[in-house]
Amino acid sequence: MNRMDGRFRILGIETSCDDTAAAVVDADMCVHANIVGSQESVHKVHGGVVPELASRRHSENILPVIDAALSEAGVTLADIGLVAVTRGPGLVGSLLVGFMAAKGLARGRELPLVGVNHVAAHLWAAALDSGSATLPSPSVCLIVSGGHTDLLHYSEGTARHLGGTRDDAAGEAFDKVARILGLGFPGGPIIDRMASGYTGGRVDLPRPMLSSGDLDFSFSGLKTAVALSAREVTDQRSAAQLAASFQEAAVDVLVHKTMLAAEQTGANRVIAAGGVAANSHLRQRLEAETRSRGYTLHIPPIHYCTDNAAMVAAAGYRRYREHGSDRWDIDVDPALGVRGGGEIHL
Ligand code: KG4
Ligand code: ZN
Image (cartoon, rainbow, N blue to C red):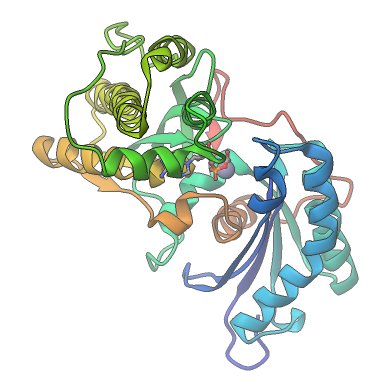
């Protein structure tokens, strides 16, 4: 909708947890700006995200982050054709800041507005920079983040939930294990780095639900097993050994169930997304296992796996094309997800 070049541009806004993010993406899924204002330093000292501090920081950052995205893309609001914003799931106070900013901008500029499901948006990261606003289909989708661990089957615009975690999400398990080992927050990247630098034997840890036959996961027993083994940790090397052993066990289950889902559904394309899909060991294992079976793997680059607004813009564009603009009385929905027996429109 640019006055100069006729391109349709989407402004994406994301504030569901502790990152204040804004992006400009065009209809060909070309990312013109992707700004993520991290609050890591605010929450680090508390060992986890403090909701009240997160929403306060979002309020301070949201307009500067949107301005930075527009400026990096070299556009103004006059060049935007659609505003897409995360409406859930997430922390209510955090969601509201991005949502109200998006609503205000859209209303003030008379632009269409769409509310986006954050979990589904993680999958749309796979479309970014691909040249086409579509997802590989039919495919099996593994969404692994701090709050969600789900397997979906996607075909031609609709998805079906195949399985998910019965307790902790995969990212939550990484963060809790890092806390047990006194490594800091967020735990995923720290464990990833520690495990990459470790060579040697492994601690024997359980692979919960590996042979359950269904497509569900459970990570709380693994976390407890790590807590018990942590009593034997005496130095940096034994901590790295336990971190590597945990990562291997978690990745074993994630990869095994994803391959099982592909076998059961006959889909030969696999999409992996969400913060934990940034994990180097998970990426290597998925690459090896899909290659040996002749499947195609679609895994976004790391900066599109962790929370960002470009994926929200992509998901919002798809939703807008299918369903048009949302009504002005749309609200945040902190409990939104991708579970349930019915069809999910992605
Ligand atoms: O998708 P995301 O950025 O936010 C949510 O929607 O939750 O995911 C955050 C989660 C955190 O639990 C973080 O520890 C984990 O993703 N994570 C990783 C890695 N990078 C981020 N986990 C394992 N290895 C990583 N390299
Ligand atoms: Zn996320």
